[in-house]
Length: 468
Ligand SMILES: C=C(O[C@H]1C=CC=C(C(=O)O)[C@@H]1O)C(=O)O
Ligand SMILES: [Mg+2]
Image 1 (cartoon, rainbow, N blue to C red):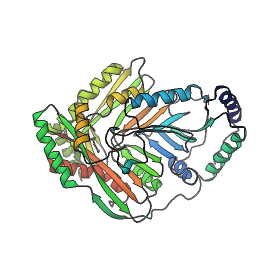
Image 2 (cartoon, protein in one colour):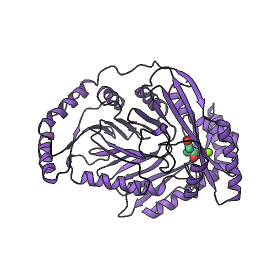
Image 3 (cartoon, rainbow, N blue to C red):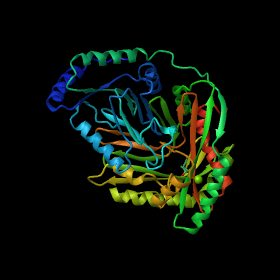
Image 4 (cartoon, rainbow, N blue to C red):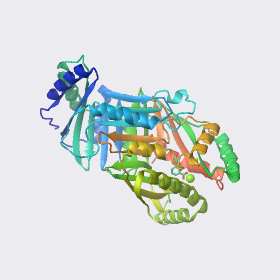
């Protein structure tokens, strides 16, 4: 049973309507309550009937933070390329500046929060694949369920305008009651099957990899990440809940996310943190260089050792470390990273891994660091600008939100962004999945092709396309 006590909502809405009348501007009321624990996926699924197409789901690798949003009380979106991170931040700051917030809990990830992300490259020509996602797109949910270190909270957000009246209170309460009454409903069944799987121009892709390796030998480019797409067709519409359940079960060490927009759903399980901000602490990750998992413990360890000593993968990784260290240096007083490269093992793949922490300077922000970092050479290349231009020119793919920052910022300006790899775009009974790899001078097109095949596996398995 979920019990929600009588709340401050009414008082807040009354106040906000008055303020909206005085300023002729909408005013946000946000109220946080501690509630009994609900399974995050059940909350997401309960929103199927009332909020389909307006939901998001987020889990971090340590299971410290689950955030599920239902409904949209405000959207921040733009297709403008110039200063896009700055503009989103400005709009967010101005929106929450006048908000009326009832929150007794000093925790990140509760209270008003925007969830969303950015496209990989807003200058690249958009195809109809990503027509449902603006280049910058964030949702402030109506209802948000957060589990922070095991403690559960419900945030209710209401935007009041000068034309609203107190009937809004009953509308919101009614919605909340309906939502909670759906929590126990049967949610879904596994009843769809993969009908066809089409890799998009694999041979042309290998040729591009080969052409790029030749170009890298001449300089000044050192690394370019090239990605490709596989398009899947199913016999029925995909149930996002089912895919999420599989990702949560199979990719425990990853960020697991889903972000619905206008009927499509961008979903995935990424092992890669772009950046987390908590107070003055910044945490980011260098993740690049890959090898398969072994079938036995022995083989797995051997593969790990091979990866840690492989010159091609170490260079691929080192470019990322070099760039991230530099970017962190511009916004942090101190930057700390381990001397030795580590291994990060996921279910289907293992990577070279270097975590980087820093103490934020004053006058900096999460989105400022996102701007400095994106794309790191794990998704773009080195040097950054030239690599992105090269990708724009040679890659036969609209990456959309793939490989880009996806995450959240709360009203205290804390938050976290993942790099949205190992992901796919669900469109009814069709899904596009994406995978890329870091091409350096010594890359071999066939090996890179196999690496992308491995990187498709997490999504393919979660979609039921690979038998476990
Ligand atoms: C671009 C992807 O992975 C990046 C992250 C880790 C390892 C990578 C690599 O070894 O090539 C890639 O840079 C992807 O999964 O689509
Ligand atoms: Mg690689």
